[in-house]
Image (cartoon, rainbow, N blue to C red; front, side, top):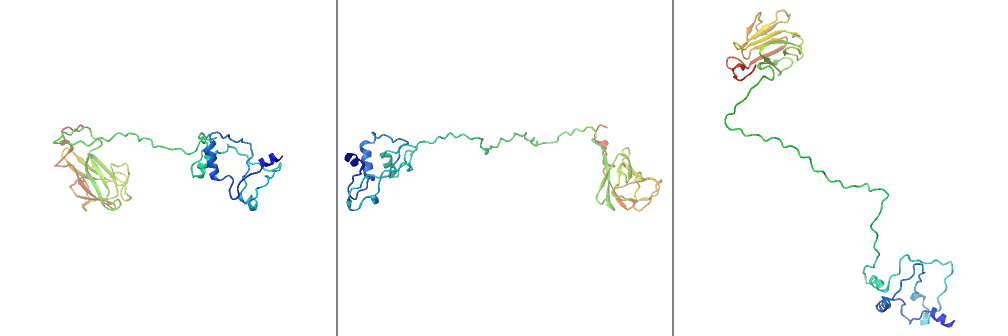
Length: 264
């Protein structure tokens, strides 16, 4: 019993701390490789501190027995060796077992990295060609009836508007179906065939012909014609409350028939 009691006691000199860093380093230098890891389920006892030592340097008595229901501290990992404890005390990085980097998620992450797709290659527009010297111009059929002159509104509703005069007979009226529709809101103009403007490419002349069957009176340069009268550039035609200026394009100086390669 005395031997067992002596083994249970902790012998140390007064003023020394059991389990100090110096003793740990000495023990690590002697038998670092021969140390056996402690069992995972073995309880860990806390070393007595200097406060627990009896006063006067007397040797401490036997360690008190822990009751059966005392809480046991169980380590899930092996106890560190003395060398590992020394490295931790010097500020080194302890040997921590690697963490498994393979982590499985129940659902895929919602954040995705989107990289811009390369822009679709577009056909470059045709480059403007440089023309040197006189180039031949090819003409074909007319896209529409050729313009031979214009009527420009200089007074009344539709001020600043214009209507194109074409070759042949041009009817003038408020209806959109007229060849020269003066449909700007002047109700004093007859809906259909208030008058006519005729261009004859044979003699390259313009004629203004009033429709005497209509009750509304028209005038050219403040004169009320009762028959066809020739039109000259900048003549003023008055219909209702609207004034129109005649601007010719074709005439003695030019006609579409002068273009040699025009196909009718």
